[in-house]
Image 1 (tube, rainbow, N blue to C red):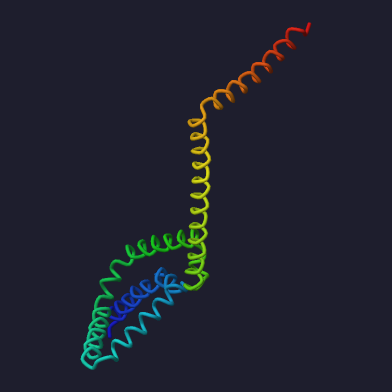
Image 2 (image 1 turned 45 degrees about the vertical axis):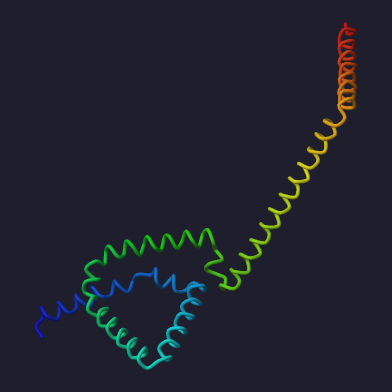
Length: 182
């Protein structure tokens, strides 16, 4: 091999290396929920592959084709390394925001997250029920007062007159006290 060919092969290897530096997929695949989901999907896929000879051979053929396409497209992917790096950076920032807003995503197992969601949902349902009961009680009390005032107008007028007289008496006492001051 000539020096130029060796250098060209070295450049090609150097171009391939940056593609492995993308870390979004690594970070995403380290999340407990994703690990659990991936394991479940892999188990299902393995069962599907083993379920029937024709299905198994077809899936193995598709896997080999996908591997060939992945190997063949590596040079094309490397040409877009910078753009893919930008997309990887954006995806990592989005993952950072998700982990900031929901820190449990990176720490808890899916069962724990689901349990927390159920507890939170139950608490909100109980709060909504309590709020509804309080409002219904308030409406019931107001309705009873309105019904009482509508059914007993003489008592209502008498109560209003008594309240007005009491207020007027207090006002007169205040005015007298103010006038008596030098």
